[in-house]
Image (cartoon, rainbow, N blue to C red; front, top):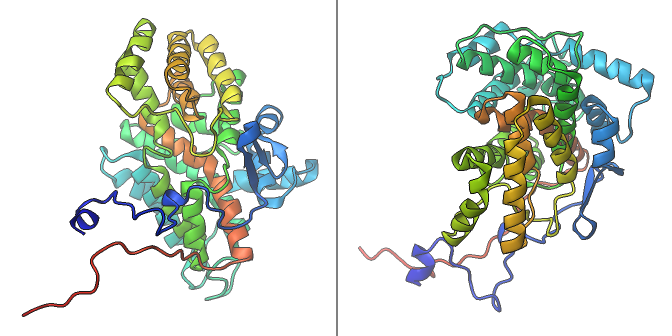
Length: 401
């Protein structure tokens, strides 16, 4: 009994309790948003292979697809894009809140706070009179859960989160805020807000493709978190804040940051193989490798690796991809474990010029599209998510006083 109480990793005897730790292998609901097929290492968004979407579509089109079920025609996309570009500004109060955050706080804490602030500004989320200029519409106290207004709120999140991240990026460097430019695409505008200039079309395409690859991935930890919150009939902002909290963890979204820290620690590609062997012998956790679902390779990696290689060509920083190949080959030889999307994304974002601790907020930019799709799907056919647990603590006892 003492083992049960003192050891947090204690698992009851399997013949007595059928516990799926981490919900591994458990199917908890249906979804029409995306499908992962481990046997073929494939991922589809609403039926489209993700690699095709990354190559042939802009991220904004992919967000439309995830929310509406089909890719937009020219007229639909023009209207959608116009709304997204018009909604990019954030209030001066939200901007000031970001400015006042401690400079040393992680950017994921900053974006979590800024999204929460946005939810406070949208009175449709608290049942008050809606005077939210960017969102419009809504009578007092109506649609608090957001089943009818969620598409509009999702668009606000998609448009404003890049502005929030870029503002935090600038403020942490002691620089002035650069307002969003409605004449630029979402990807181009993000570079403009962060750096005050646009990179080459090749770099913008690399970044845009990465957003599509990160946009959605079925019932991953952060997406499931947003669905749990939504299932309680809470609002889309609360669900998104919860998703950000889940994504912050290094076993989920934070892995792309850890990949780059690992590469910088290695430093020289010639050290990569020996470093990996030593790390494995020491049983260190190697970020960027392995996946709960994919056993034979992450379907998104080949496309992201191609764009990371393109970034190496554009910037001349080729050592990171030489190191990448050495680490990948050594891990496969020693453990037969394949890299996941975070492994090529880390060096790609680094070569684009972003600070390492902003890699996961960029992930948030992308995954907002998938989270919103799942939030709307959960709300449309809701049942509160409330699993059971198997108690393995002390039997009933009494206070003897």
